[in-house]
Length: 155
Image (cartoon, rainbow, N blue to C red; front, side, top):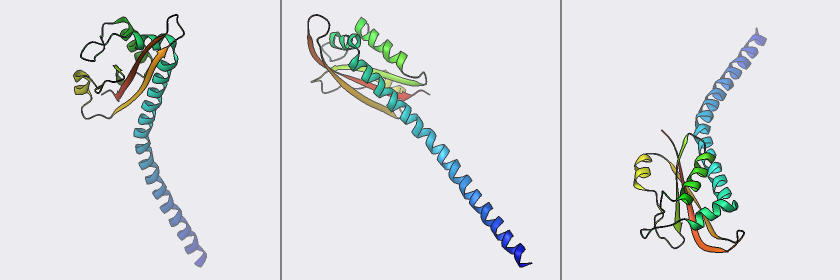
């Protein structure tokens, strides 16, 4: 009779441990989804910006981009279209983005109003690089610019 009580206690303790472990696994799995999305965004954003800074053609697109008197890039400009197409093809389809190219001295290099409204109540990840010059293609170009990439999860 005494031996049966010991086995029952072991069984009860095992069931209690399994219940606690199940709760921990459920809590961890729901928490890891949001952190994996953040990690995907940060890794994708870093890769895109590194590719822009190392690809000679993309560097030229940034340096030759025409910026108007208000400090905004001209969206119909071929250089901007090439840069935007590259970013679009490099990011996963479930992410929204906006790429901005501003003069290095520009105080404001922010998200435009259309994308700002789209990102309300969303986490927006922002990163930037500086592209200062390109000397590989003929005439050296020195026109320091910052490329700022805004990325968020689409609805």
